[in-house]
Amino acid sequence: MKFRGKMIELHSIQNLVKVITTISKMTKEVCIRITPNHIYFILNDQSIRGGGALWCEIDQGHFFNEYNMEGVSDEHNEIYLNVATENFLRALRSAQNSKCLKIKLTKKYTTAYLTHEVELPTTATHVRNVTHDVPVQVIPRRLWDDYQEPQMPPYDISVYLPNLRILRNVLERMKNIFTFLEVKVNRNQDMSLSLDAPTVLISTHFKDLSQPTDTARGLSNISEARVRIDIRKFLHFLTSQSVNPMRVICNVAHKKCLHLFLMHEDIALQYILPHIAGFNVSIKRILKNLNLIRNGIKVRETNLSKGPTPGIRRSCICTHVRVSSKGFHVRNGLKLEAKSDFHQNSD
Amino acid sequence: MEQSSQTTRNRDNYLFFAAVDNARNISQMLKTVNFKEMALVVITPNGFKVSVTDSKCIQAAAFIQADLFSEFHLKEESLSFQINLNVLLDCLTIFGPSTTSGPHPTLNMFCESPASPLILMLVEGGVVTDCRINTLDPGDNPDFEFPPESVVNKVIMKSEALKDAWNDLDFTSESLEISISPDKPFLRLSTHGLAGTIKIDFSKDADIMECFNCSVSQVNRYKVSLLKPSYRALTQSDKFSLRTDANGFLSLQYLITSDDKNHACFVEYICTPDEDLFAS
Image (cartoon, rainbow over all chains, first blue to last red; front, side, top):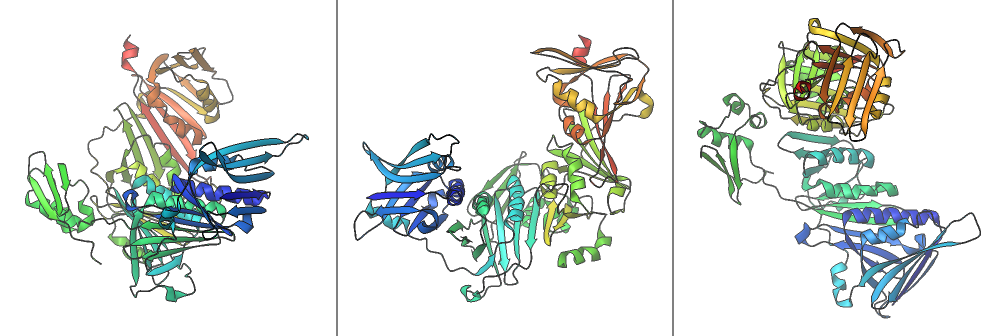
């Protein structure tokens, strides 16, 4: 098993740093797969940590001036390594302004390292060299199957994402308010991001987005696809704005996942965010139930007649809300109770 | 745009409606009083007032006059509610902290009834954001009053001078002492902190001093922790007035001009003197 790569173009080194910065936001540990033509960064997060998957592919020819590798065997000419993204990023950062960066797979005693040899520019004739040894774990052949390209469930609608800067600003604010957000796209090329927090309902609408040309790719006939995701994870992906992608495609599989596909001359990055199911309890129903036991719980009748949202304000002085798989249970200090069953968000 | 035509059509249904060309004018003002989560909003035909009270000892209020808005309609005499100021600010700056130049969002604000949520509609570059912020009953917040007839001492200064002085003060000190006298040293700010005592004097003849009316010599102490948030207002203001009444209540009024330099708005901080220290 051998690997050695040399980069001398500042532009490519900086691009690599940007890619790794983005990846380090998404995950603490990443798998590096080295093949004769490409380097892949793979994350295949299992459901314990909320799912999500990352698949980033870079063409070695666009980054490395010299590139030699030898896989585990002739038949399987590949190398799979596990690395802590933080360490990897730290080593690369020191190379940000360097003249030359060499990355080598080395073995010292029993540990394998990715050794980064950085040649820093100097005004004098002396050369300054910095070497970082980043510990890596070699992934044995039998586990390679865990790191194959993620299977994308058939998606319903796909659009190009709007201006990433605006999108990022909007999500930054939304993150301050709540954890989850619903992404909605429809066949009229509109996309909306909505957030339903106890204090506020926000929805941002982007109109007339362009759609990938081969529209046949959308498989189903539904006119609107929705997916509920973690805002922070979406934001982590958007740090990739710094690599100046040409286009970012957003594929939505209704209530399954959000697939983001970043396209750049040298980089292709895919990120899959799983749908997080949330029960949408009708507020009206809660209030009706509370109304039955109104003495002790303050619910204004005027609000009730006005439909769902106005009612939630100054709603009640309940001290317990217990949520089970079947429904919820509200109890106030006087031990008056209200119950309601969940009903799934109607489609 | 579908939404906007809808709201235009229903404009008469709203108890309160206001429009402003640049949402930054509003968010900038609200930032100066954003030191507590909940704020009381009082809307009258004269304008929009947002006040924040901490420990019943300090009240900060930002007044946004009705003429800052391009449209301002209120059907009743007044409308008041409590709102989460952090959420309101996040909504107003949803397209990012806009810079003085460059694109800025336009804002429409609606309120259907005293009990309904405050609706904001922001538009920037074709992107529309709707926000429905739930509000709370106004409650019984103490309203700090500072009638002009009770003022005993009044100083008007350029903010620039106080900004420098403020950075020189020692905030390890628990309180800030403000002394005003008709003779030397006129206006003195002092702190007694771990590093020693710092005194800063302002002469009444200095260029930065626009007005100095002192009828009674006064020495009062104020909690530094309470006054600290007022620095946000100070940095944005052009000039400010410092007034005290006979009981030592302090009113700091900051004059803030909007980005387009056409409108002046006020932020007022009213602070109670530190009684314990005063008695000892």
